[in-house]
Length: 561
Image 1 (cartoon, helix red, strand yellow):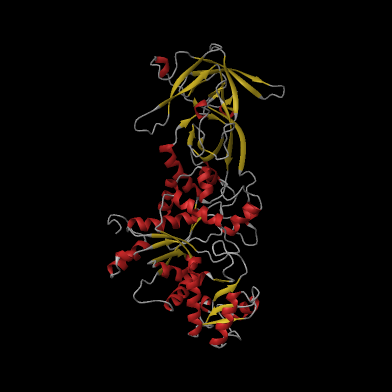
Image 2 (cartoon, one colour; image 1 turned 90 degrees about the horizontal axis):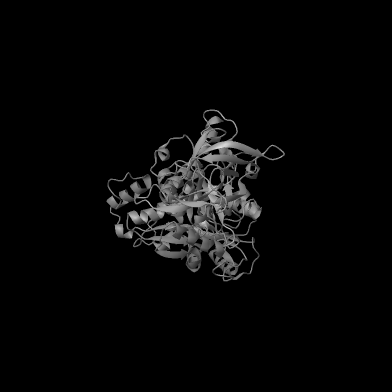
């Protein structure tokens, strides 16, 4: 049972009410039922956390079921990706199930519906069926094939199964009510002919069940007690119940469908069809591109399972749709990586600094803390020399009093090192600053215990020693879309809002401690942001993906609009 001190959401209240009204806790079973027609995205992550979280809270089993009823769009690649994503989030399923495992049972039940006069084969075209279905304010018209005999329907359905007809020539429809106010109840299609090989059943079947017919019956076969789905399926609940009522055995658990609101994320799209278009049109480099809202993309970007689960917990479960600003997701990953990511120094836009009074051909190794959030502080050695790189934006020849970085005639502290003073800017023929000459205070070394080491200056800069620096590739990511809701503009294609600057690849220099960094390792580049080593990395070239800024710079930009 859920903890009494926990504030329950409306889904948990439904379960608690069922338990109080006599439902046996031992019969609780949940499921996560993705269609394997694409990679999972951040919206799926909320559903995963909901269903598997309920399993943990109530000590109940959770199935991972693939609703694989459309071989035209489904692939084994997607099945394996989904399994990886659920496991990466830290969840374990009780049973791995497939709707395709139930094709024979679903077919047998459909035959029984035909025998009861509750299903028939319709031979109209899809256009004719759409026209005779009516509108929300106008009742539908019965198909001219609606009153075929049971014998004729059974014969046609059998021949459909055997592959005797071309795709689109016949469908099996449930015989319900063409005058229903719920248009989904107006004789919905249960089966269509489709001559496509299935990723699990190959060419065993020439007919495939529709989602509405398959979903609830699959829940019933697996004895799922509570079937949770998003709000767009609310109108489907009546049909879900009608199909179940026609196969239900009172000695078994009858699944209960309930709906919760989808949480939309700003500056992205989560329609699998639209995500597939981004992949196929080459806007992104695959489903796991770090700009994608897929779980695989977020993982490659550097998001952690804990941050995604925290995000899902924070936005909660509600009955009304809402747009969640992506900055909340970024906040969650910052909070998590702040505790975990070692601090290192890297320079993305290098400017050479020469410390003219530092001895030539000399180097020393300074102590630098790995993470100030550690309970027991650990340190690493960072090399220091006469020539360094700092960020170009950290130096100005002249600046106002609010500029606390390096400027001519002023001092700053180099992180974990010395105080330096800018003396001269060296420029090329076009007037660009190519290096800065500085002097240093040899008594000001951090941690040396001298009075000078305690001297306060307003600016502290990160840096790397040029002779020791390791060159790496850095991929900096921006939002994929310039508009918060790119697919909500009537008359406009969401692709019109693609951000042309969503990816910037640069050469950078990092401290030598990163030479042996492995794919998947997280770091905080001090004063810049959080990064992860990309799987593209090799022994010859390290590639870092920028996960997120150290602070929410977008909130400030949006506030100025």
